[in-house]
Length: 354
Image 1: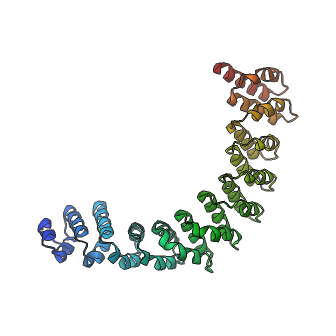
Image 2 (image 1 turned 30 degrees about the horizontal axis):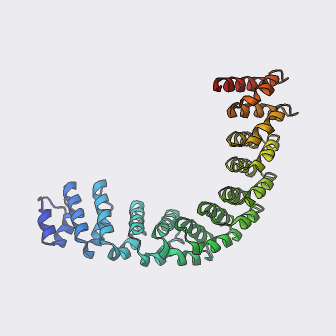
Image 3 (image 1 turned 180 degrees about the horizontal axis):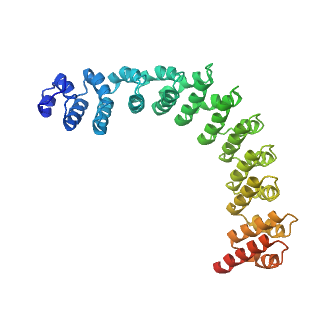
């Protein structure tokens, strides 16, 4: 039954008339429903949990918003009902329930959420992983155990959640996950280790030889985030990968390292058989702030490859160092129109910068 008479919300709240406030959640006036939800949040009475969850389906967003805040205010007593709400047929209710659980951060929700990682509904699995990540340290041990689950999707979600928590206890299990039988799990493990900044150079270097190119790509990106000089040599070796996507990804990583050792490999990559790798190498060279780049690019203006000469001129234009002027002026006589044009542009940029 929908109510029509405007109730006195303040009086209901002051006298703790929880039943009346619950009843008022069905009022025809959205503003009244909103105030009722807000009042129930202040009273924090567990009797309001189920009605407030129902209010997550309200047609008015601000009623749903106040119902969400109220359930968060109720806190731990709302957890069992919120867990059930994650099974609701309404996707919005599922997602809102998960969001609230993530903010309450009660450890009692951990095991049920681990079970949700096995749910057939992808949205529920993703939300469960997200919530476990927000719950944080109380979820770590359960998530580590989930890394051994028979379901690859569960293991993937567990890796994802542990990456958000960034707890030291998870480092060794995440490194072990680089050997998981499922390539998606190995990919995510490499990505997470890079985001965390875990000192895992050697395990990630091994992952550069993974049978799956996506895993190799992820391992390369992760190594690029390691503050360890050993990673550079492994990445240089990865420039020989059989998959151009991996080689292109490595050029981008090398460009961010600001290490003199990457200059020659990037110059060589300008001759790669794949256009995207060559383009990536040129872009990486332009990102390097190193004296050796200038010294390597000036001779490259006379390389046998037209594309190498073109890229050398383009990058020298971005560097804008007047020491390249003489070599670029000579490049104006290049047999290739593309190289001559690039040299002319580069000279213009350098002279404008003087």
